[in-house]
Amino acid sequence: MSAAPVKFQARKTVGQVEEGNDLAPKFDDRGLITVVTTDYTSGELLMQGFMNAEALGLTIKTGEAHYWSRSREVLWHKGATSGFVQKVRELLVDDDQDCIWLRVDVAGGASCHVGYRSCFYRKVPVGGDFDSRQDDGHIDLEWTDRDKVFDPVEVYGDAPNPTKL
Amino acid sequence: MSAAPVKFQARKTVGQVEEGNDLAPKFDDRGLITVVTTDYTSGELLMQGFMNAEALGLTIKTGEAHYWSRSREVLWHKGATSGFVQKVRELLVDDDQDCIWLRVDVAGGASCHVGYRSCFYRKVPVGGDFDSRQDDGHIDLEWTDRDKVFDPVEVYGDAPNPTKL
Image 1: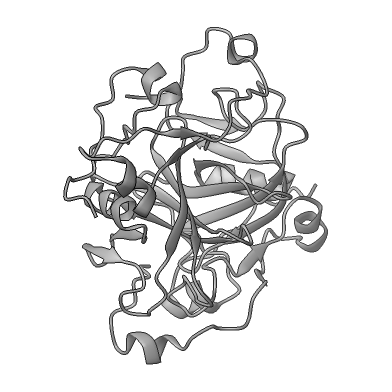
Image 2 (image 1 turned 90 degrees about the vertical axis):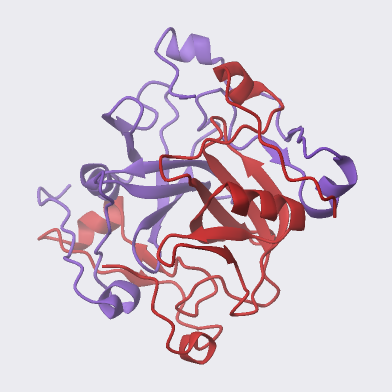
């Protein structure tokens, strides 16, 4: 691995950012950029997280997903605890470079701290489906996955749950 | 369409939020929730945006994607200007309910204001690919799509570009 750190370019013009070849990511006032992570093969959305500049640089250099954990306020090598490392097959950036798309392999594993394969295991009825079911505006979520890939208590022990109310 | 507004539940416990049937979304201190929008058929990531409570309610009721535009600070019925409305086939919520996943159809259309089908049309070399190419840490983006679906000048005229430096 090259010893040189990953270099990001300064954001100079809209043309450069939207239609140039420079990687000039926009980190927000917290120093973070939004990350969307999908399964390379199935296209399934696995999780949505954040990176700081260090996490983005490490992801590019190592080819393994690194995030910034907002709840724990630490650099987070995904899978360091659970073993379910995300191998990055493709890393894309959006038009205005304020979002990163990771297309990953998670061999047989999960990306959700609750134990499911994906963080997105519940569905909201929309449009006609919502309208035909609800008189009072109340919504019942529909489950799309009930099979946990791992037992979070076994894997994370008594580490604090990252979900904030 | 029912006249009742869409009702969100209060966030009471981690168990309720992560493994219950209540829709209890977490809006951040700006009143926004992150939205990830993929193509229902191809699985391609089209865009990443934000919703406020009104946009989420309207999306659920109408079955068409509504967002909050941070650059224009308005409720944004996607496609109102370009004609490329996003029909929501599935709307999912993540474990801690601070992210929405829209799976949409955009008949023959685009979701990117620059004119491409997806906002993600450039790739960053990672891991071995990055390492084998770069000595000084400099990155050249690789284009994955060069074919615009529409001409943004024709569609948006002289409306201000939403990309911020």
